[in-house]
Image 1 (spheres, rainbow, N blue to C red):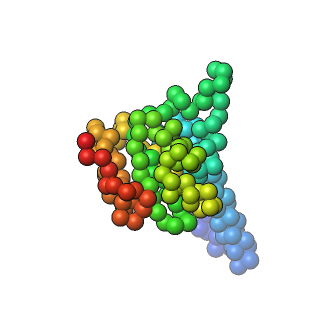
Image 2: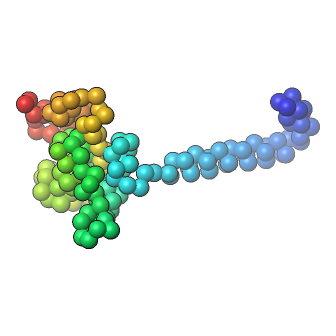
Length: 168
């Protein structure tokens, strides 16, 4: 079969070959773009896969109402773990931990968390957020998990964190 394809390529004219090559490249680009655009659409999946998402997407998913009255759908997905806030405009990170990471991360974008993060967000800096649940992280202690990520992202020395993490 491969030899048959190669023999057919030999009889193509140069313009036909170029057209075929361009078509294949465009097809590959379309497939890559489609695969890249497929994103988890619930906070549960985002947390489980540790995907980085925009703050607008986070706030939209966080504020969705469940079918059960006025409760937020995200309440049932609020788990212990670490959240990593990335300011792309300033190349700075903030790493935090909580027993309810969705609620705690949300506070930074409503003026009830880190004031410097909120100020930069209010001024229009571009932020993303990523969640790392404690369960499945391989670490038993939430404080240790936070310290690991503060160090990994240099959030104390170059970012928004004012401490290297809790010592408890």
